[in-house]
Length: 306
Image (tube, rainbow, N blue to C red):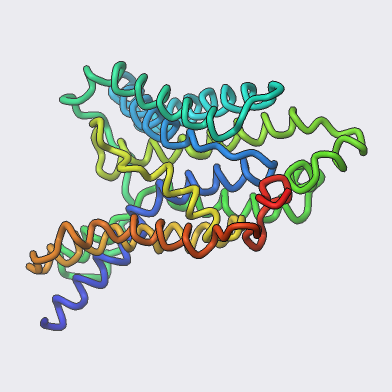
């Protein structure tokens, strides 16, 4: 390959990592917050898809992509709040409820979103990081989602809040030892419902990114399992919001590998390269989830040894 092709491929992978990684970032941050409180939300796939549909519909009807983003986040919070309330009931299992929520969210999105498959909605503006290059391929590859700085800010705020605030300590305490939290007089169920709801709001921003930036349309296959992959991504990041940033970029770059190669004329193995994020997910789960032991950094209430 020529130097220009190498530069174009590198820009495609880096830019694609930031572009494709934005939904991973928001969903993993939402799940990180939820799991820090001692609850798992496997329904984030449904949250992601339903939020993507709602954001697209909101932007289409109002003409404002930012109102669409807000609507997507609110819808994500509503679905997650339903999960949090149901899981607080006696005898209700987080995993089973999450699977039901995933089916509910995707089913509602597919049913309500049928009229939105053909129309075009206004898109979230891009931040041009490729202004320095004369290559249109490089400039296009480095057009970055305007939601990315918000995601980075959310990661920093969560990291700081977990370490330095009373609310962050309460979330961690509820996740590490519900009995200790109750003994100190803190409402464990209320804390988990609030954390799950806010986690759904954050994940809803990822859904809005899917339909209003990349790929920038609404269709029934828009998510490709990113909500479920994010659960593995949180394990990979060891429940750290800052490490979720690096993990999201890694998964985004893995997803962008195929298109980056195709952009420079490498067509062989295109579909094989598209499977890289799923292979990474499987590898993380195999390495991290060993029988009889808890992953390092795992909240105590999620430990398989309890």
